[in-house]
Length: 69
Image (tube, rainbow, N blue to C red; front, top):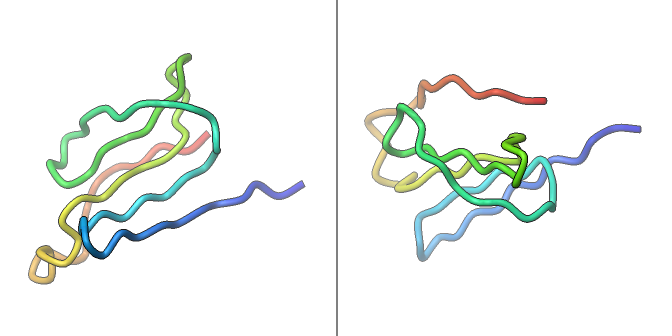
């Protein structure tokens, strides 16, 4: 069975979220100030959030290492 990937963009908050799971979790910082990692209670990666997307026009592509389970 294929895993589902959910992508959500909040234009008002200028916030892009990519979810690998609907499990509850919390955000932790990454090496990139514009990227947050979402993890569950066990530390498994369940998504990523990208902050200030529209302000990155000159910085695209965004380079960061992302881990997927």
